[in-house]
Amino acid sequence: MKWLMVAIIVGSTVLADLLQSYEMKRHVVAVEDLRPGRLGGLLRGLARRGPLVVAVFFMAISFFAFMKLLSVADLSFAVPVTAASVALETLLARLVLREKVGALRWAGALSVACGVALLAM
Amino acid sequence: MPSGRALAHVPASNPPSPTRRVDLKTKLLTGFVVCTNVLGNFSMSWGMKHQNAVLGLSPIAYIRLIFTPWVLLGTALLILWLLSRMTLLGWADLSYVLPATSIGYVLSAVLGKVFFGEQVTWERWLGTGFIVIGIVCVGLTAANTTKRETAG
Image 1 (cartoon, one colour):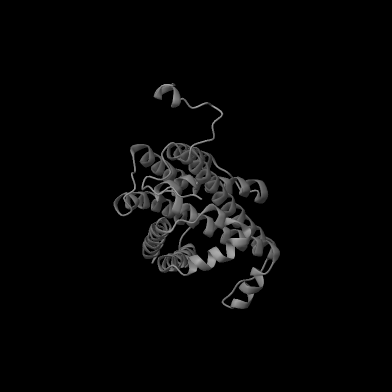
Image 2: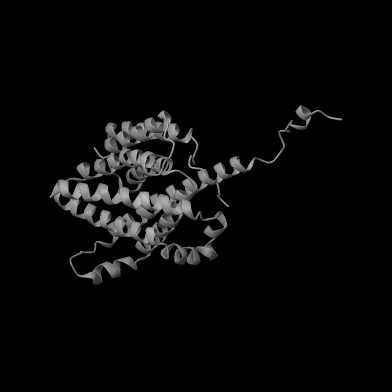
């Protein structure tokens, strides 16, 4: 059960972030749209984009799977698992989104993943 | 008539280039994403700890809890976090956003120690150091490597 939840959390987090990154780069939001008076319109606009709706659905799955994981495992186990997704997402950003991930960015991502794992101890 | 080289000279008082401006906006938005996430989680946690509500299977207790001031503030901040993070993912690489926003883990640990009296062990300080090093490394790279620099 524990490892099934881990797989669901990592898988759904990765899919949600990839979908968000892909869709938000197709239609970039301008800084003016972040003004308080325009936030409602921005929210409505984003809710009409299919990939973002699917991404939020995956985020919800990840959230509830995390809650379930906390009920069967320690927090010190659950949090490092989310840190592992940083390294996996960096790899997929390179392969799927065609981002240029150089040595410095790889070092940074792995350092952050180690750091988050240590924070959870 | 001035030479091409002379025309190309840029005085120090000139406004920043569009690329630099976009980079600055990306960094400011990254800070906003971190702040809304950390403060949103803190408000939620503060509200939950001070309510002493017993949460069972009934949704009524959850709904009642959502409309308490701190949890409501936390929910509003986390909606802002979601919107601003989506916007940031349009401006910058996913492989940039993930490590750059992870300073939130450190700030959450600091808030936990200051406001909730949580223990910060040497492993946590070491982890904080790793995260800061990682953020510095990622911060030295270009935020957007897939082109399209449209930050407004």
